[in-house]
Length: 372
Image (cartoon, rainbow, N blue to C red):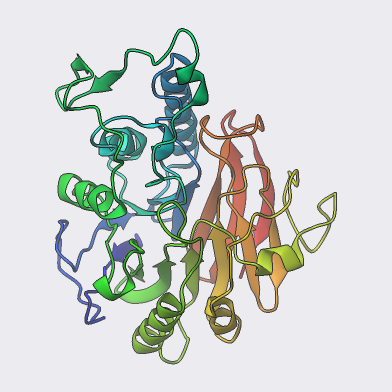
């Protein structure tokens, strides 16, 4: 018998409502992904640090966006996931001199959308960062003639479509939600703003809870790089409301690693119990710990946390009774020349298990690990 998976998005009252055969932009949302009869698995591909719009005024920048689309396309073709997570730094807003950076955000979503795969996104530190004026613009030959794209894909020179004010998190998220029926992203409770993208997606398998996916905005860009006390309290309240006995496994996604990642980081080479292939830089952690990790380690249903941000790290390491994992740098934008790829999660329904591996752009697979 085939195994059906359902997503629901909790409303601000935290009531898990399931709408039959409905996909839309309401606060409660569901999409069905049908697996093959022999599989009974739910698969997630994580795209981290795409950095679309990098050096948008050069020839190099748009070429990197094309290359990033090739990476995502390769992963999607090889893995055929049921769901995709965009794990922050979807765009490099500090390099984008146009009025609406959603145009670049939309490009980043295109490989997933064109294949009819639902997705959810969470913000990183570059997604709404203020525009940074390149110092070379003020030397000969001076400020370049900017090509600023408009909605109909034509171009205008320094017209009203050009802007250096940036696009806010709220604008980016609302644009994604309003224009993509497959997007399960949410702005989150207003009480947690300026953090946007704080929400939870319960996944149902054959009408029974399979796993809960939590998304948190770890800040950066226009405000400090933290998961706030208010977010930690919100998570505690919601998780106890929808999963009071902790019977349903839970996974957490945010962009910037917590300070706990520094405690488990491998020294030089990656060795057991950690699993991964690159450990080329120090963990660039959040500015402060506001309580979320204390809550997570006390909750046995939490199986793993997934972050991006560090392009030269792709390991998973155990921390207390859960796993702390980096995704793999997916985009050709951003720093570093390490090979691109994507962390894959596979959740087996019967018997239950969570496993993960890295799928590279060239199709190879490595760093397989059992997370539960």
